[in-house]
Amino acid sequence: MAAPAFRRRLIAAAMLIALPFVTWYVWVCLRFFDGAFVAPWSASSTVDAGRLVPTLTAVSIYAGWWLLQISLHVMLPARVCDGPAASAGCALRYRLNGLLSFLATAVIVVVIARSGVLTPGVLCDEFGPLLVTANLAAFALAAWAHWRGRLRAAAARRGLLEDYLYGLELNPRVGGVDLKFFCESRPSLLFLVVVNASLAARQYELHGSVTTPMLLVNAFQLLYVADFFVHEGALLTTWDIKHERFGWMLCWGCLVWVPFMFSLQAQYLVTHTHDLPPLAVAGISALNFAGYTIFRSANLQKHRFRCDPSRAVSGRPPDYIRTAAGPLLLTSGWWGRARHANYLGDLLMGLAWCLPAGFRHPLPYFYIVYFVVLLVHRERRDHALCLQKYGSDWEDYCRKVPWRIVPGLY
Ligand code: NDP
Image (cartoon, rainbow, N blue to C red; front, side, top):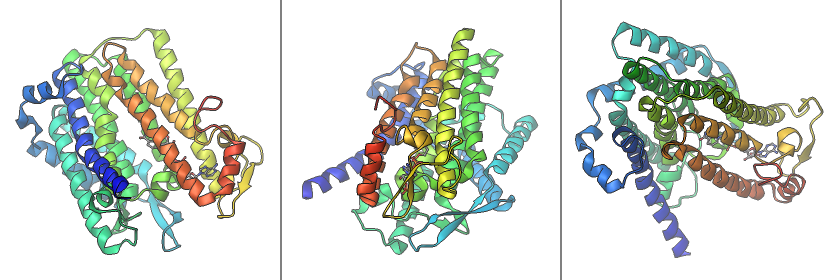
């Protein structure tokens, strides 16, 4: 028994050290080595350590961003919606005003850029200090969540390191703000859009134009984020909201990984100004659109089915399995083709985000490699959880829908 616990703690410690290092390493390769992989020791000796200290500008921008987003979330009109049942049994209520916050943020950012208070490329200039600032914020927020969880959560403890990493409380709330729900979008996806725009602005300042690959990456990710806010309510039936505790993993993933690693391709493209033939533009756009269509329709089918099981799926009455545990399992539409076709859609989009970078360096493809690993692992975690929850009903579902992510293949 001692060995697996020791191994788990070792993995937890490795993740806490390795993941922030990876974000730093990728930034160094992009900023100082033209996007080429370099030996980590030569990267650290070449890069001036001073650049890794949060600057006053970076801290002010980051704190200002949080203040702005919390104010918009709390003050703008919102549709109030019931979420999944909390541990106490009653459904938590969520304020859905992400789209309005998204639009208000766009106006505010344009006003700030045009007023000259901050230059449009400032997030590109301050990328390193911002990365360190966001890391510190994520570690601090996770520490606070851990301390709060120790006082309140009844979760079974797994040891300090693992509790810190995976969290204790499912839905910590402060002053009516659900931290997990907030972090999933405002300091993560929404910040990503602004970082991308700033990187495009820096490319324009340097080269006098914004290239087609940069436009494609910005447009694809903007579509993904805008779509997220249009369907904000669908987040309430996802794995993260229902099952993932608010620990370092989720916190750091939202605050650091999403804005600083998903912008990998745009970072690369700032100084790589190649163009793409029209056929490649059409092919990559079609791939992104196909991925988006699968991703969105699969997620919506499940969300709508869970809200109203009588609603038609793909124009026909839904097929489903009635489970002893209570919830129904949809077996038609995308959920009848693969048990996580929504992941397939996400993966196709992820590939389309990488392709505009071309094939000169492998680094921009880091995203799709990581994403395949993440979603394959996540599907297995979800499978184990559902098997535990639904038992033989889940086995029935697996027999009926044998494919995990890619119909006919995997
Ligand atoms: P899902 O939205 O697929 O949710 C999984 C849960 O849905 C299960 O735990 C189960 O919960 C329920 N469920 C499973 N099968 C069925 C069924 N047949 N009918 C009804 N309910 C079912 O998982 P995720 O939260 O992982 O993914 C949501 C989206 O977010 C995906 O599109 C994914 O690709 C994306 N994503 C993106 C990431 C990124 O980094 N860009 C990272 C992770 C996810 P229960 O039965 O308990 O309600």
